Length: 72
Image 1 (spheres, rainbow, N blue to C red):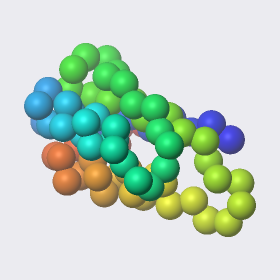
Image 2: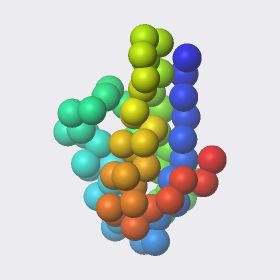
Image 3: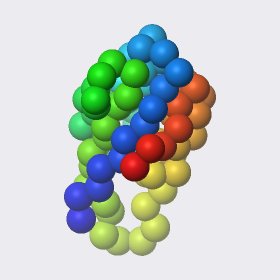
Image 4: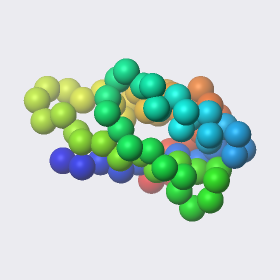
């Protein structure tokens, strides 16, 4: 299953830092791009079909560490 989550950040710099962190993120293979401007980011990934997939939770925690919150 394909999952897309968008995050809103306080500043463009916070969004860029989040994008940069995802480039070297060891948790899961994700595709991240700016979304509706430069202060929000959309992240796409494939949900692991076997067992529990904590990717969404890990993304939420990473976004929060960069002053971000989920918007969709």
